[in-house]
Length: 553
Image (tube, rainbow, N blue to C red; front, side, top):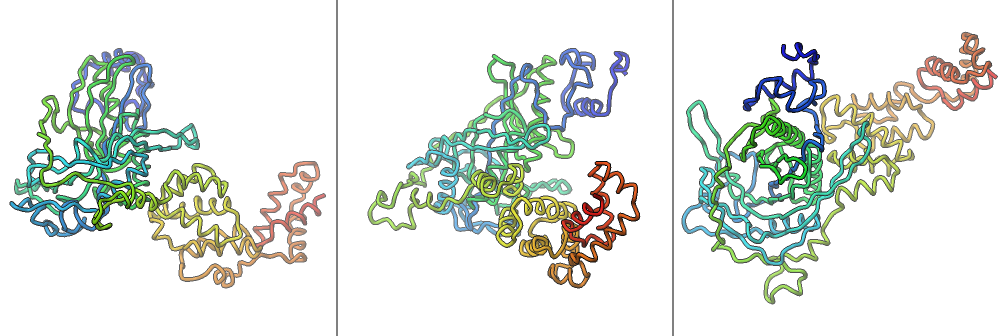
């Protein structure tokens, strides 16, 4: 109503935007005061759930991330218990995991190798000597009352993550940025607390307690949700390529905490809030962008941002207060007395004499096992096959799609650009339409290569090739050759037959023929379409064009 009194039209986007804020936990000033403070008309206010880049002249945004990556290992960090996501509750718990008196930690070499490999892939300095510490806090799912981590001297420091995302008006411009990696530290995961509201009970599952984690701490080098989401996706791809983390965020194998603050240019950094345990890259972008806008509203309306921990509600798109940090918790860090310093050696020759190779981690051996990283894959795809950068992103980001593409290229005479068109449009289109993963595709790369070879050999036309693709999708047990033979879809390239059909089309459309003879050559395409209609898409297009050009000249 007050907007109408001021002669401002409140469109649907603006309405949703302000309703979102007035439903939040904040107590805002009256509506006109908000508008005056922001110096914005309602129509200028961005939608809250969009990827927003707030104006830099009004505010500076600082975003940092902490990523907890569950190490892909058969056993836990300090015990021999198996690791399993779907195991029955409390079925994968050793005496050490349950913190029974007298039990001692035994470090898992695989977890150390995973941290070293991840550090090398992220251009980190690997500390030849790192230390373990106890971080004390009291939760029911942490039976020891402390977590073994690496606070003082972590295993890897000072790295960089280079990530890219598609920007520009048409989302086809590659924007490349870097974020500094402050450190990578090894630590234990906690158990799970399951809250039973019906019985007013909290149940504890210790299956996850003691599972090895890598905590990757990024410097606050980002400024919006889109950048943070792109960085996390790139990190996820790197970890999956290395095999050090499976990266399934839905199963908690990769968990992200975001630290967000807003300040005016020239002022000290603002008070930060932490948004905990975000479970997808999309929700990460949404949570950060919401939090940026929330803090901007608080500051512009004269309020103070609280130093607090918040969670993100994916249904509403809101961040919700969990607990404040005004009184910083004292974790009482102390050296872990039951673990010696963790030593990493440059080469086997530098390891202590008499130590078995299976008991040490050697940098040169880990370096030799580093695979091709996602950024290198994208560059190789563009340079080798001449495809567009945005296509290289899709091939690398979609699990197994790059191998599918390269298999088709190897087994067909068609060029890479033609193959990428089929993979991006026909294959991906049907997968997305039916909500299937690539592993569920009824058409193998070999089957797609057969279709393309039939087209390249002149046995079927391009339209028939798509028809065969659709038929193969419905009946995956058959081959492309069988479908072409059974349905009589082979190319019609008999010159006499093509001449007869073309003459029929020309005689039936004198106006179009006259238009072509008057110089409108585009009309020829219409006549070609009519010929293809007569032959149900089977006529050789090259021969058809040549005959029509002759008959309309």
